[in-house]
Image (cartoon, rainbow, N blue to C red; front, side, top):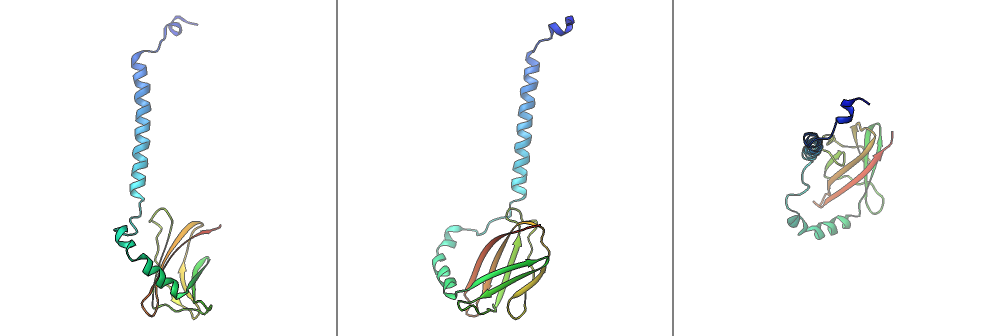
Amino acid sequence: MTEAQKTRELKGIHVLAIVGSAFAVIIAVNLTLAWKAVSTFPGLDVQNSYVASQNFDQRRAAQEALGWTVDQHYVPGRFSLAFTDSGGAPVMVSALSVLIGRTTVATADQQPEFIWNGTGYEAALSLAPGEWMMKIQAEASDGTLFERREDFILEE
């Protein structure tokens, strides 16, 4: 060993640089994660959850009284929805709004235009593999609102 290697020691300035570097990395990671969290937040489902809860039971009872079920089917380029009543007959809704997107970010959200084909609804839609969610709002002929959120996974 040389004399220079023997006399090298850890000084206060070195410790300060190590600690300062560690904190700089922690702060940079925290700032990056905070920015990603804020920039990818899709927003609120309702403005005031208390007000929305006040008529939840009535809306749920009215929706259950319809007796509807909804089935979805996706083939590349085509998305199908089929509403059926309690007897299994196809239902044509008076208004339909569907939002399809990723579960965590709003950048992939789409609102396809569904067209009645005699037994259900179809829309031209291209989806990549992965986890998706669909929010359906359909209105019955008597004005009853049918709401459903479905999560689904598309395999490659």
